[in-house]
Length: 207
Image (cartoon, rainbow, N blue to C red; front, side, top):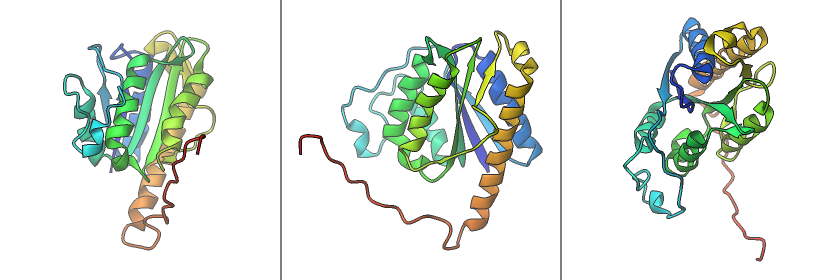
């Protein structure tokens, strides 16, 4: 069992990474592997709605990190999407990646546990948390519960560790993710492995 965590922050070892690291520590305590992938600071393309990903070969653009992340998505058992708050919204690089990732690789993530995590010095966390959760909710994924909103506060990684409530929430996320993964593993090969999936009816407002 492996959890793929995406660090959308431009700061590799900043507050978002610290939150993900706390989750990774508790996952390890409960026998679950994890990997933190940092998106870096290189430019990331936004989705242009070309539909090229429908061919099933990932995103048509190969000049940024997206398809490399997509290959990791294929073999992961659960996901954590981590973002700092920029102007009361998740950082733009992560949004660009998630837009293309869910179009190109969303089928590999269905029916798997997922978590959104945000970090901020002070405010904008609940708005950002809401944005990230929409990706999970639209893709037949299992949103992992916790004990409060999935957020940490601090201006540095060291300050995040002092956010006792935030740290406890991160650990609860990890514990619940490990629990869900173990339940899903036990369900393999039984009638409980997958739900009956209802086909999506897609309409426009004008017809």
